[in-house]
Image 1 (cartoon, each protein chain N blue to C red):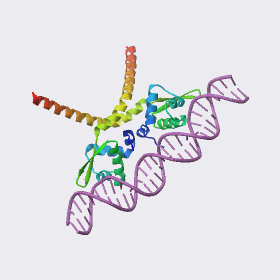
Image 2: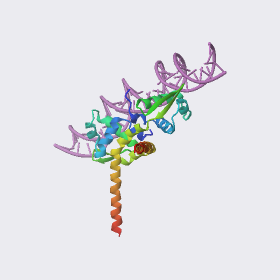
Image 3: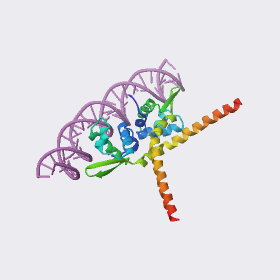
Image 4: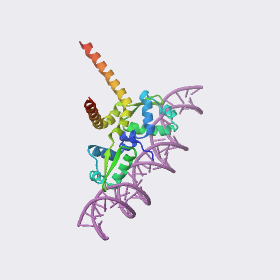
Length: 106
Length: 106
DNA sequence: TGTTTGCGAAACCAACTGGTTGCACATACA
DNA sequence: TGTATGTGCAACCAGTTGGTTTCGCAAACA
């Protein structure tokens, strides 16, 4: 199925996994130890993350290390950017209002 | 039910609604005209967006105008910030490598 | 070689999602 | 007053999700 990065980060467990492997690559078993869930459930989450290329695998013997593809998160950042411009503009306008009020006091 | 902003922006239709009302407040009927879906479906999306306070209502007679609460999107921005630091650091490190290579050429 | 370990995949299941239709209600208007 | 319009809400439904259990397979190890 076609995966979407916004859907991938919608699940809190997946966001926690992302936070975990951002520090260092981990195997499914190691990741699962951090949650109250089965390894298989973690594997399913990793599959979703892999499908939208948020995560890559590296095999070492029978262990598979998953690591975060940081730059994929830039897609979210890019989506936010237009809105960020808007709220920064709004903040600057508020700033101007405050400055005006300050100057009027003088 | 407890709503999560990440879950709210996971749906592409909801992101489109956000983009629409970011420009100006709109009524459910007006919003629905932009999609191939019923007004009731739009209403359900607006309900989700309202529950996580991404959207507020303003009643004018029998019409209800929905507008975006821009600052709520900062929650996503804040979540991203740690990762942004990481990829910026990585970019700078790449930059240093390139500089070193450049200097070695001299 | 036989056993343990780490893993993915499949089958199954309850809960949730996003859509629809039908309805009730308040406002606007003739 | 009666009718049209804008809206939210409930009921229903098919598809998806996130979890579990079970299994098969390859690598590590006795």
